Image (cartoon, rainbow over all chains, first blue to last red; front, side, top):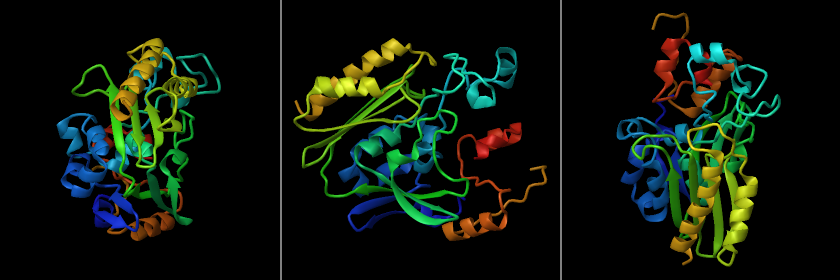
Amino acid sequence: MCGIDELKQVTVKENYLSIGSLVRLDDLKKHAAIVKEFPVLIEAAETVGSPLIRKSATLGGNVLCENRCIYYNQSEWWRDAVGYCLKCEGNICIATGSKKLCYSEFVSDTAPALISMDAEIEIADHEGERTLKLEDIYTGDGVCPRNLKKSAVIKSILLPLQREFHSSFHKLRQRQSLDFTSLTVAVSIDKNGKLKSVLGGVDPKPVVVEGNSDSNLEEIIKLALKGSRAIDNEMFSRNYRRSMISVFLKRSFEKLIG
Amino acid sequence: MSDNKKYLKPVSVHEAITMSKVCGDDFRYIAGATDVMVNRRQGNEESFA
């Protein structure tokens, strides 16, 4: 698929900036329109992996980043000894003991930033082409975190122009230089005062809380905590990550609203 | 690569969709950059989904 040039283009389509799914994360900052209109996307992309990874990783790839869990991201040897979890063809969640739900975490860094700016996704598959809100491709089921067909190809990510977004981005991780997220908080507010907060790393899908410039911070925090189904399945504890949701949202509001 | 798989290289999205239709259900897109070849060599087929 890497030979498809049309997936590597950044173009303007009507009132949207279309970013091809094969645009590399390190190349986002080379496009003036992204730098000017959506700097938070560059900020988010620069927290992905290492510089070497960002030179080969693509925006489409990061949006589809596989969910993670400390009980899933293990060697075959480890799984053989401890047992296979729901996400690995087993019949029980090792983290919670549940036989129904997998809580592996959504860890894309760019998707929360994109969703906070009302990004859409252009998809082609055997049934044709369509455009969806980016948050609608995530199921919330850790075993099958996306509802895309096997034949689906992500053509591009569409970002609305002329909304004059002001954004904030925070990422919690063990090592600032490399790790996957333990909590991502992206908040954007547009020129009309529409506010969208998006959390990653605390649920099998991005947690979205919408409001406006007059929204009560405590209410936003309450809704964010209610929507986050974080469990103890990574290095930081569930309680610490939930505490940090409040901290990051407060910092975001201070930056954006004052 | 010492396997029996056939690799196709589409030059457009339309061509990729057409190729996958011809293959029925027996295909996988490969567009990865960071993990694909590592997983491929380990025989982790699911990583191609």
